[in-house]
Length: 220
Ligand code: DX5
Ligand code: ZN
Image (cartoon, rainbow, N blue to C red; front, side, top):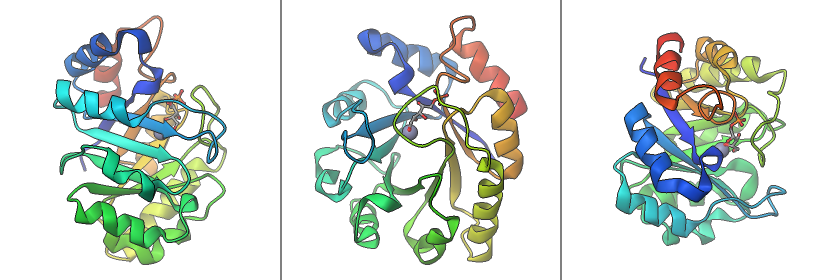
């Protein structure tokens, strides 16, 4: 199965965003991972909807939007996303999550459902027909530069097995948080398909982004 690289742009040079996007285009990443936070669902605030719409105007790299906000359904219409993009909401963030997933689907956007480290993979059980991607958080969301949770590999394995047992073989599993080359290899073996690359693998002081992306493609 093909593996996908998703560059976490909250880790890019925020003062030179367009240059960072051109560098990521040259590096050939498959997605731009855009973290949206509200200071309530997670204790931080990062990027916003205006940035998403501005990105859509300047690049063809599909967006992989990760909404870490309460009641994400309120905000779906603010984003000009297309069928190439993925819009991912958290299981824990909405009372009627199935309705929210349907709303995203009905707009023709690919749907993602994220779960926090403490949320069981079992929660995917009745939702497989509504999702294209399962985002298994490998850190508690909110900040870059954290350490992976110790049960991440086991959880990815359990999620893959559950999805496959329910006919969800085509649902891609994404991992997000401390995906270093070493952790990426472990997650890949456990069944992950999309790798969110931040400070642990792509935005490095001593390595060019293109080289980092090429090296990751060889090992994942
Ligand atoms: C949160 C973010 C971070 C981060 C990933 O949702 O997506 O997890 O940018 O990069 P690391 O953990 O490598 O800094
Ligand atoms: Zn994220």
